[in-house]
Image (cartoon, rainbow, N blue to C red; front, side):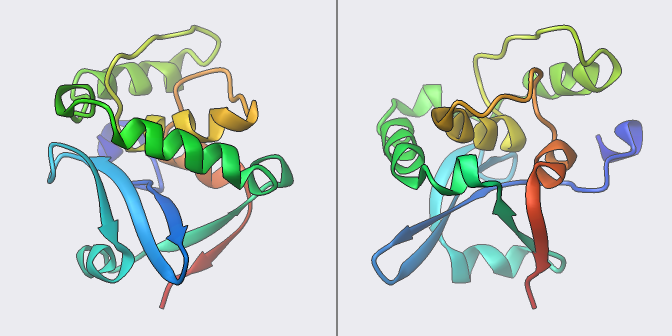
Length: 143
């Protein structure tokens, strides 16, 4: 997919802090669906990872995002499957950003977009990982 799109980022996920424990919520091909995984276990799969600090609209509304994450995680397994057919829609949205494509299952970036939309954040199209990276205030490389 990155070869076709010229995308700089290959994946996106969302961090979820529960008391003193950091998790990552993501959907990807490897898992075939949406999972909540300990950050320390998640990071082992990545040699290059970044933490994005979101804009105030998102950062100031963490409670709404967490609520949406927990509601999503309660969905039946078949509604949390990886959306292979969503990938071409995301790619088409890069070519035709004004067209509104609808997806029923998520890929990594549309899942984060779904959570961020709890804050009324709108991008106007199906987000790709690069769109999310461009939508944060700053990216920090995780060492």
